[in-house]
Amino acid sequence: MNICVIGAGYVGLITALCFGKKENKVVCVEKNRDKLNMLKNGVPTIFEEGLEELLKESLNTNSVKFTDNLEMGIKSSDILFIAVGTPTKDNWDVDIGQVEAVINLISPYINKYKVVVTKSTVPVGTQKYITSKLLENHVSKEYFDVVSNPEFLREGKAIYDFFYGDKIVIGSESQKAFEVMRKLYEPFKIKMVLTNPETAELIKYTSNALLSVKISFMNEIANLCNKACADIDVIAYALGLDKRISPLFLKAGIGYGGSCFPKDTKALVKMSENYNCSLNIVKATVDVNEKQRVLPVDILLEHYKIIEGKTVAILGLTFKPDTDDIREAPSLYIIEKLLKNKVNIKAYDPMGTKKIKNIFPDITYCDGMYECLENCDAMIICTEWNEFYSIDLCKVKEIMRESVIIDGRNMLDIEKIKEANIKAYYSVGKGNIKN
Ligand code: UDX
Image (cartoon, rainbow, N blue to C red):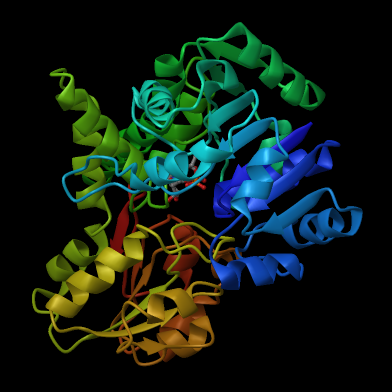
């Protein structure tokens, strides 16, 4: 089929390449010249498993063409995917300005029947709004149908998720559009949920909110575990054996980050308020996460009472391992709070340093974890990078000024901590040790 994907950001790029792999002809329209040149030359614009190979293959087979020529992209395609950013405003409303701009830009070129699909995460009612905008722009009713088709891609596993996801959600009012979408997704052999646009839009928010609820819930229980001498990992394991709960997304830590959970939970709360229907559980989930992500600083304050002038090592800056993405990473909030308390910060991350340097140019960035720990009064593990699992605790004890460890991701083995005679160890729900 002939497809046009508008926006070569994270979602747009993956969508374009994955459809290209399934024998479609894809045009991916991107207005940012630098990004466009990189993609045309087979250089990935984001870090994602398997992306470089897929990009190169798509260019070689000519299945995906990158361009800034919107007119050509629209006129040559039967299905138009809108994959532009929908950030959350400070008041938690979703900013659909970029979607609106795209609708205005594409309207003049819709010269025959096309299915206009929203991949971007948009609030309930956006598909109706897009329909009214297209009609307002004098696009004939016979020339388009509007579809909501949200994505559920995890960063780092996005290509895998696109091909082997659990579900495909399609929301529309049109049987004709359903048939087009069914044909497009048929080769993926993934279960499809066909529904109305409002339900599809809400499925995306509900999915991210429920996963966030699970995390915040476990984090609150973890905080109780520390006081009650219980072990959160054992609780999570036991809960996960119950098929009704599932073992996934029960890992306690210093909260969720990334480009979706923080933004979508807030947007859902705001959206519900606009409908005069308060979502208290989601609201509490956001509150719990905002407290949880700075928990290491609270622990540090409790441990030292005065932390001004201390030197703290931050291990891990990205919001999760195997990505260079620092959006809404707990490390950002921890560093901000430490700086307010006049703490000296040394930081190490295998991939996220370049991006975080733009936000905090004045802290000390290190090339390795041991260099980072030298002469520090505490270390905070913010991200569970694989290399931290094998950290040599005897060496840690030797090179740190004070071996105080705050393990925000419950990575370290308490028995080994005891053996190495570490001065203090704080976990999230697996107990603390103080010597
Ligand atoms: C998420 C959703 O999984 C995906 O379906 C959606 O489309 C976009 O948002 P992503 O942001 O890439 O994907 O990350 P994910 O792996 O889901 O983790 C999100 C955050 O939750 C991370 O900060 C992670 O550390 C945290 N998390 C996850 C926990 O704290 N505990 C868990 O058990 C699982």
